[in-house]
Length: 418
Image (cartoon, rainbow, N blue to C red; front, side, top):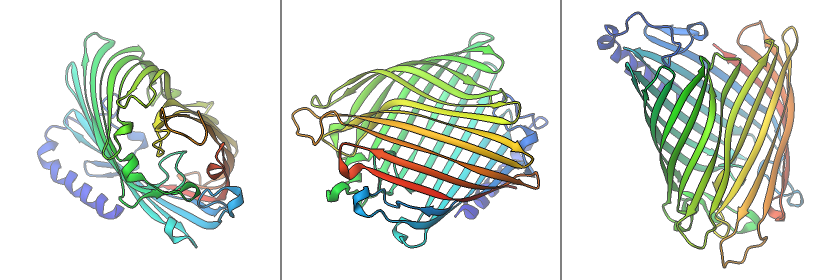
């Protein structure tokens, strides 16, 4: 599938080249206009720039394939995942068209029901003009993986949508932006989750559409750091379960760091007024946050951190949503020569909200999911190949016995950047 899609994409981009070559204006540097850093591009096929990547990961043992509770004889199996990825760029006049194609081929030796082929496609096109720039980013995902920390079954679903935005530079360092997004999440008609033997159809409960619109003010604090303030509205509509329909108003402020800065990524903090349309579902007004940051110290030590606090929807109609708070991070250290080591950890808190007038097993239930692990790696030949050994422990703590589990994964990985 990956080869077929990649070939089709290259042919399409190639067919566009002739009428566009006259507009290229020398190719550009790829900095500040949405293009790649030429020094990092490994393959150039005419006007198409590409970075292929092949990864073999999780080649080892999963001691709890189905995330079963400890008293239900957890199943273990040998597993492996192959993940080819292709990043591509094409210069179009003053803009860049970028595409990423990724496929995860997941294999289990004994439990064939857990095998899957997960595909994701993203396209990003940004057109910078004199004082106005436009961006369009459609995405598509077809996967049979766990939807999040709450649901332990690997459920088939598709997600598609996109983002359309316009940014107007009013002053030398200040711009105003308008953004609209849309996403449709559809679970397979036979996708079920059966905690404790009581099955729930995930298509009936969680298939939905999400749309939003926002305005923002962006100010360049430094050439590599942008401060932003935003406000917007979100609408979520479920196809078969109206009890979860909601409207939200949110405000926030954050920082975004250029990919060429020492500190990379972004962090956003805000306030959400979450209003379910069903009066029996409690509202939420409070703090939200999201962030993904990385920092490399002296070219030898890399720190990565992620955090999130926001509303997430539950499969259980008696507890239709929960407030998720997650924080995690990792530290990778180049030890000596081609060897490196990494340690990582994550903690997530799921605070459920109860439907009024309905009996629930545990009132105001709070589940916790945490994981920790690490690994060692060896860089082969000083190039883009790395051999690693990893071990990770994951655990869920819950007042409901059917939601508790412990699992250990350990095995090898191999990554090769062509």
